[in-house]
Amino acid sequence: MFVKHQTRMCLLRHLLLPICLVGFCLFSVVFVSATPQEIPISQASPRTGGAQSSGPPVVKVVIRQDLNKKILIALIVSSTLLCITVMMILYLLLWRYRSMNNNSFNGIKGKSDSVKSSGSTKPVVHKVDSVTKGTIPVYEYQLLESGTNKFSDGNVLSRGGRGCLYSACLDGKSFVTVKKLDVGGETDIEKQFENEVDWLAKIKHQNIISLLGFSVYRQTRCIVYEMMQNGSLESRLHGPSQGSGLTWQLRMKIAVDIARGLEYLHEHCHPPVVHRDLKSSNILLDSDFNAKISDFGYATVLVTQNKNLNRPSEYLLDGKVTDKNDVYSFGVILLELLLGKRSVEKPSTEPESVVTWAVPKLSDRANLPNILDPAIKGTMDLKHLYQVAAVAVLCVQPEPSYRPLITDVLHSLIPLLPLELGGSLRIL
Image 1: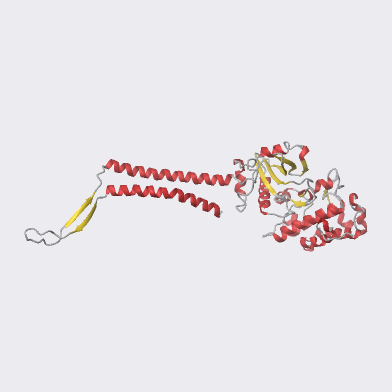
Image 2: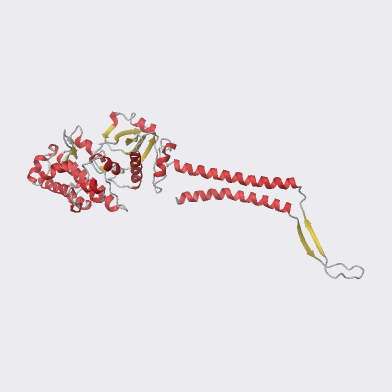
């Protein structure tokens, strides 16, 4: 904002200085033309016939411009019209300058020809926080459409309730992930889109998804992320592969990555940030299975419109939001990683939460090997398995005060992760 203020002041200075000079010159001409001036000059009187006058004579020098009234009136009218015209031009220039600032963003380095500002982004731009305004690149929708083969099924990384994730190749060289949302006139989705763009422009962490830009086109909204080749955790756990590609060690790495991202939000952001919509579909995986938290901005709509059993009970009852809400959701994801079950199973009757299904069974740890995800059975130290299960049960306690802080959760999991994957476990 300070830079913009300086730019505007500089523009005003450059335009107003010539105006003032022109006005001053015209005023001087008009003033001199209209007003005769008398300058008294005192001199010693010459002696005439030996007689001396009673006092020194006063000589009056009159300076007068013999301009007729028509010229005088023309000068006054023309100077007035000139001032009005210049002020109107100045106003239009300032209005245009402000419109350009509201409708444009900086391009991505090396891609300025591919990333352009569009007038259709104006409603969004106005609602982006002033701290980040002007720093978020805007992609042409046609570029994203071309890069995803017109958003073809072959480019789908994962599907969600509000949209799909697509892999995209832009200009044949840049690989990105595109989240496509269909607003369809729903103001809640529009608000979520704006919130996510705003939050991701501010938050930078290795386990938080990186925002590259966004696009607004008619009723479609797109958010451009860094490339996440392995899609969402949900698609890897519950998709066609049924978690077969996720080893025990990879699952622990993913859990630690999520906990690190949450710790950053809760402990290192000022003020602290509560995600409020943490679930396996919002955890994205890159080519090395590094996990990153995405989807900032969906909490309000999902809470008010859906009975999301991934939510802690106190959130559904009184709407209170604390960091313990995220801890509960993390516990649900941990149970998914252990058991291979969805957070909410949808049989023919009532939907059942993995929490209500698993917690009674986990009261006796001897049951754990029997309900474990078949894809990882017999691949870990049972002592480590019991530790992770105990952490998960603590996280999903009904009473929020009984749930641990995410920092404590992280410190409990790091010793179970091999050193080469970012933990502290040394495997001999």
